[in-house]
Amino acid sequence: MEEFSKEIAAIRQDYCLSSLEEGEVGGNPVLFFEKWFKQAEDAHCTEVNAMTLATVDEEGKPHARMVLLKGIEQETFIFYTNYHSKKGEQLKENPHAALVFFWPELQRQVRVEGTVEKVSPELSDEYFYSRPIESQIGAIASEQSGVISSRKVIEDKVKIIESDKEIKRPEHWGGFALKPEKIEFWQGRSNRLHDRIVFELRTDIWKIFRLAP
Image 1 (tube, helix red, strand yellow):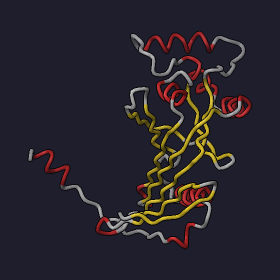
Image 2 (cartoon, rainbow, N blue to C red):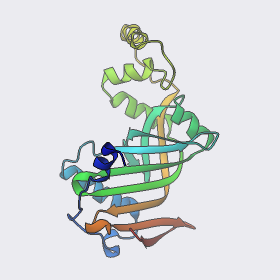
Image 3 (cartoon, rainbow, N blue to C red):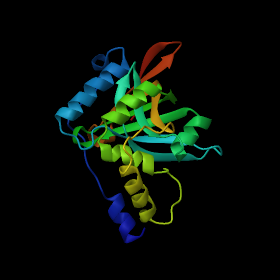
């Protein structure tokens, strides 16, 4: 084994902060997620609302990237993006997606799987106009995931948009709501014997299971 690979393989961290029992989680995983999220906020976890979003393309190849959770509405997980971006196009073709939250300060992970649909234009407007004006301009200027010749292309577009008297949300920019069908709560434990509690939606009823670590 190469020396650098040995160094990577030797990285170890034992998890011993907490445990997770079936009696703690209740019967609604979204409510329990909100409880864990609040605890992560209180613990000042870095980028507490950052989550990995996984999608698949038309060839069935997986793609993953970090995005930000921007709300929980009617028990759905909401995030915003350019609908013409790679993830936007992939979700249009295949609405199945997965989210992963990791809060290392609490030694916790949450996995969410489900299907997505666009949120209402009104909700997209509400969030878009709540953003700093610089972020609004950036969303308009960027043809997200498109190839550009240089950064100057974007900077020039920003200057042009800044001169406009009125900034409007583009129709191709807005929110997605992921409706969960499966949620796994993972609590790190010593010796890699982690606690894993899973909720799975079956005929509109949440079933609860414990998984081997």
